[in-house]
Length: 151
Image 1 (spheres, rainbow, N blue to C red):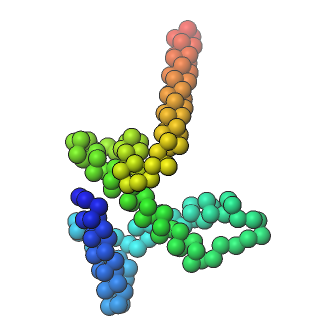
Image 2: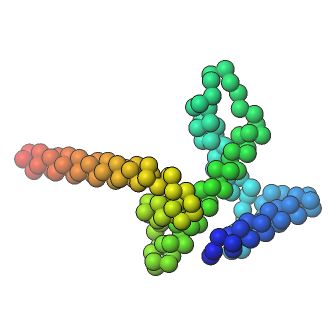
């Protein structure tokens, strides 16, 4: 699916949503596969977004409800935009799993080059951390097996 097809699908979704609201239906609607989608299923949880938004705001500061909802929509759309590009890459390579490298290529392809280097560094550190955690787990499991064998 190309970016223009994604955009067209998104516009169609908005038009369907507007028609549903105008007719008085609930915010539930069917997607192309026959399952029901709710409005809140399209967005990241607002509580997670509020936690992140509060970090730079002074303790006595407040964030307006419409600002929170706007950021919720923008962040959700941004993640969908990047994810759809990464999914296209994995499908083109006949893989069923999207990995971090797919996301980095998606950022680059979509013009977010400033994000690629810091995210590459983060991904590398994350993978090293997971590798060391696994090694620590394996060492501990061998040690406990050795102890139980000696008893």
